[in-house]
Amino acid sequence: MPWNFLNFFIKDNGLYSIIIGIVILLVLIVWRKITISKIKDSVVCQQAAELRDRDKLIILRDLYEVKIFKQMVDKSKVIIIGVHGLQGQKEDFKLLSAFCKKSQLSLISYDRRGIGKNACFSKFKSLGTDINDLKDVINVVKTKYPNQKIVVFGESLGAAIASYAVKNNPQVEALIISNLVTKRNLAQYSLSFVFRYGFAFLFNSKIEMPIFIDNQDISSSKAHITNMNQRYNVRQNWSLRFFLQFKKINKNSINIISNLKQQTLILQSADDVFSDFHQLKINHKYWKSQHNYVFLFEGKHALINEPSIKALFDKEIMPWMAKNINIQKGPTNNEINP
Image 1 (tube, rainbow, N blue to C red):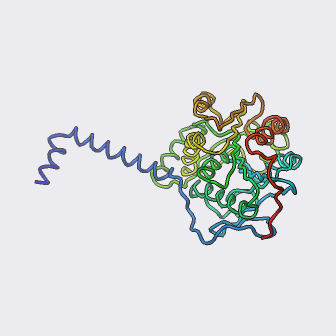
Image 2: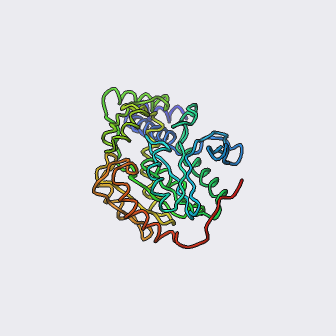
Image 3: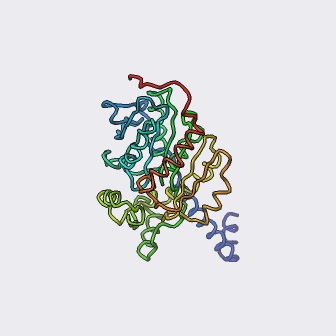
């Protein structure tokens, strides 16, 4: 009986065999893509995250150390936690820190895993780990400064990571996102890229593929371009796993942001190479009353290091914080000794 059933497809009905074979192949391809692009935490929790070394670094739950930039202001009632983008580092928020200090806001930023002054042995496994790292950072900061209000400020990829970490997180008062990546195709496709992509998809998702990013397109600040040129080459090597998760996290973050309960300030530059402006119009329809969308007619992707950041901070960011976070009220919060 089983042989007759098999013979029905192979001998007498070859078309059915072809159709079934194609369906099975498509199912395997979809399953493989889902597996590679799945955003999940990839580390084992060994302890609660905590500040160490006179608050110069944070020990994460798997004992990995991330270096931080910290500027506490005596009379601040708000701490901004900065999350840098793909080619960023914690130092990118230093320009912003000068304006924060004048406005009595404290600022903490950190280098994500394998970036900046952090140990480079941390190999990429999943952006889910970056999301949970930020949750650790938020928890550590809120634990030490329980009376301070936490505002998370994410730029580029950091904005997508921030949206995931802020979702259903009562420790966070508000979210600021700058130039979320909405452009779907970032790679310059070539025959070599296609072959490498195909081989990585079938056999090893850790195989790296070249992505070319010209820092001149990202920033108009000569100082910031110099910093980025010192950090990275024009050619970036992304693993297929990172490439697929990068696209997925940016796509999903739109829906997450639209459903956030926290007050959210959305900043978008007109001259942003990572933006799909047709998609931005679609996204704009999802923003709710708690979302304040600001379209800027100048400024490139690395917005917080653009020459116009001072005017943006004074005209948009601070008025929005004063209105939505109520920073004019409440007792002065002093640092609590660990």
